[in-house]
Image (tube, rainbow, N blue to C red; front, side, top):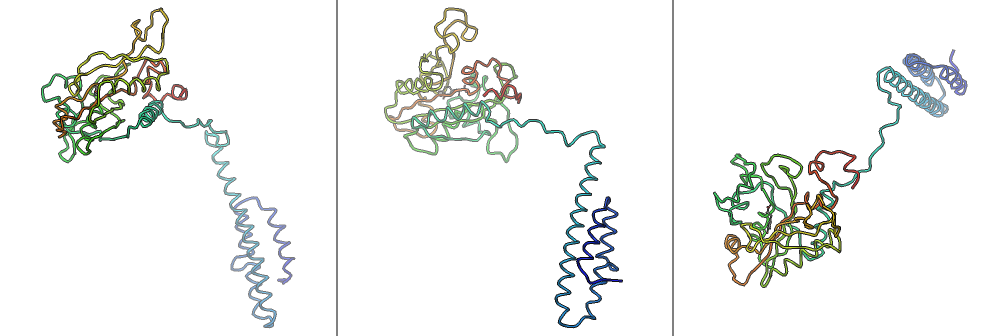
Length: 346
Ligand code: DAH
């Protein structure tokens, strides 16, 4: 019955193969050729009776044909399985052949963009970047910054407390100012750092308040640092960040860790010199930008900087705030809502 004419066998297989329409038929054909009682298996049996010098060539031809048939059947099987899966999926309600939703090019969040830009402006001025943990000690967040227990300044810095005895701190820092303490306790002057990061307040969320927001702290300590250095530095920052025409104004203010302390305003970015009423600066022509001042002697004492020739300045600004001023955003909550229409504008 069997022929050892390999091309005949292959031709016959190909005719049967083309007619296959189902997985069952694929299986049957596989059995018919490769199975225990299959054509090729039987052919292999005849090998024994062949003269020695023909055995090798014969065996090789069988193996070549075997692997050809095997490959074709496997390919067919995969294709039929895919077809079956697709038709099953199509019967379900979704249509996997529909094009997917358009991809939105990823970008960094406006807060991160502004943070990066602020860091770039200050590093160009010779500042380096320092970091501190978000879980802080009472001492670093308040005590060493001249805010002792029961000091009224703590009222504005209500925060979240941690009771875990294994924690290195007991509260979520309310400002980036504790990084000043960490840097001064671990490095000798001269110091010229900025410290960007997240801060926390136990506060109701509204258009201008959030329980989590971002700040950048600045600290410079050396012999002979003066208020003029502070003014010059912040002036350069304001012009770089908001535009060449921007002017700064220092108003006396109180922060326990600086003396004298100031609030720094910039000329209104919205109304500029127009005489019409402006809702952003409320007609004053000025917008509050940040807090600053000369490092308080009690802070130097707390960190162990005892050389009387040392002076320094510090400042702290809210990143959301300067971002809102720059882009004319009136509601801080927009930064945290992940609204793509809002975010893709940046
Ligand atoms: N830490 C202050 C706050 O969050 C901001 C601040 C004011 C930082 C004056 C300073 C400074 O370094 O000198 O309200």
